[in-house]
Image (cartoon, rainbow over all chains, first blue to last red; front, side, top):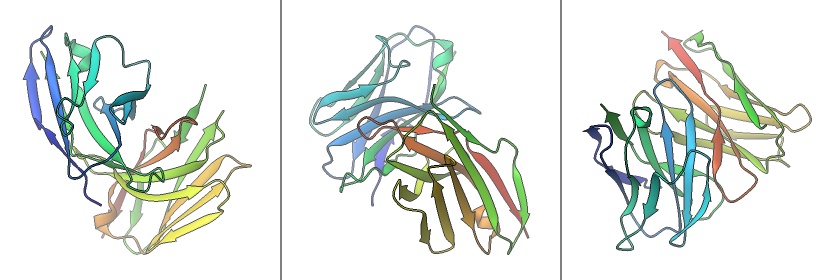
Amino acid sequence: EPEVTQTPSHQVTQMGQEVILRCVPISNHLYFYWYRQILGQKVEFLVSFYNNEISEKSEIFDDQFSVERPDGSNFTLKIRSTKLEDSAMYFCARGATTNTGELFFGEGSRLTVL
Amino acid sequence: SQKIEQNSEALNIQEGKTATLTCNYTNYSPAYLQWYRQDPGRGPVFLLLIRENEKEKRKERLKVTFDTTLKQSLFHITASQPADSATYLCALDMNSGYALNFGKGTSLLVTP
């Protein structure tokens, strides 16, 4: 099954700046997810998005984060005021078309906060 | 709290042998367990899903077992090849929705 396309592949930003990461599905899906992976650590769940609403979110997903699907196609993760510890790979994923539990990940966006 | 434990040390095996990776979990009653492959700098790639009522699942050279009594899954790669070298992640559903909780992964190195 096709995955999702993520942009940018790498972004460098200054601490305190806002960052928007984008995810574009190949075709229409209902379930989307954002995960992050700090270098050398495990893949961590941030938020799930179903039918244009947040379905679940983790403790990591605080007020600094937000998700949107502004035009019904792109799916974005916004980090309002970046911190050094936000440096990580951010992965967008979509659920299987059959909703059987598998996730299909994009190639990720590497965020470096200086 | 819910925990997923995978062999923290890298597994080095010779080409042609069978690789066996372990995933143990605590404080979970998962409906299913999944295995993913992750190459450096890339996103995880789905490999296999096994449900709580299934004991074993196979796909080509891959085999997964799931023992809900032991709270353990074993992931086998038979006739391993250098191209199988990667980190393998175990993932469990979070008992709500379809979000997954991942283990830290086990690095596998297959040498010729």
